[in-house]
Length: 439
Image (cartoon, rainbow, N blue to C red; front, side, top):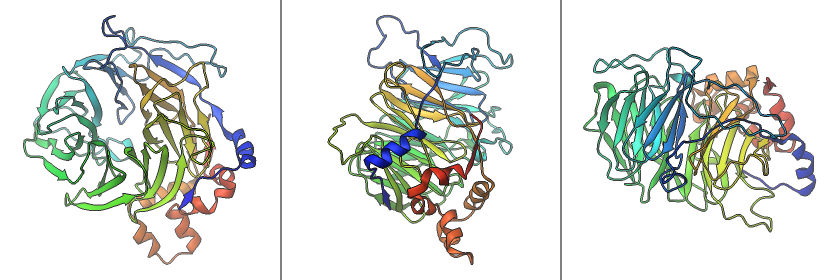
């Protein structure tokens, strides 16, 4: 395992790679005055549809906005961020076949998930259920434990899933184009729903957590479910047998968020100990440990704000972290410091709660406690051929299967991402070999 320890000299030499984030657009909720900035206005969740044509925004007070993407305005903020435009979500839409929709869920919305999700966002193998004609639906996890499911194209309510006894904190569709939905709840359980026949009344229930479950993700090959809760552990479950696999230990405080890399070879987690860990989910070993803050946990600086969200970029070479203060950071895989961070004062991420990359790359959306959504430029790159080959292999081979191949050790280290730790001294050079920048 590589633990981040950045010396002053290394810090000075690496900061040249960190750029201030560019704010592209901002969505501001138009709440009635008595409700503005009151409890319940938080944006707890936001999501892009798998094909990138819709953006779902939990804008507070039980309302979800379904906004066609791209947004109607294409104004880019200058790099000095002297301009801070705020756009409402009303008005002309450039895509005439898609219209903005307002979903009144009747309860605080804590989680959102578009489905079905094709492999790495592709929907070619998606077929509508014979029980409803929708090929794209949105599941909303509510404060009362219900999950309401909506038709994205019409905005119509389809059905409600009942079974949880408390807040549905997270939702995730299996990324195989099927109709399996995983939900995580404050009732300390995960439910796996089969939506092929509509409202599933007999979901599979996974028990084992002793605290609220905050986040769940399904691996790209649909073999595993990762879940994190108000414990110091990460739980891995079998998606095929619905049984517990292993517990990942290493965090020193509650684990709040997790995400699989697009090839499923890595699992990233964020915790209230300010740490971000990259794991090999097949072996349970930590590959890299980073701190959201600098100079890091060994400095004299004390940070009492909490990490809230972590997400991989669609090509799997970057990940983003968002905290409750003004910090949003985008990290290149294997580098010790972020390549992008939020501006210091003019356009910060105020009390960040969640983040998500656009499935085509280039955009990071962040949701805040005051109900706003901010869209930031993120690195847009073409991955190297060797990285694409690695992703293709890892979509079908576990770490154990890779290590059993009759190939050189260096190639095994590359395919299992262990080369990230081997190249930590020249991480910027190593990363530059994997991408061609389009920004």
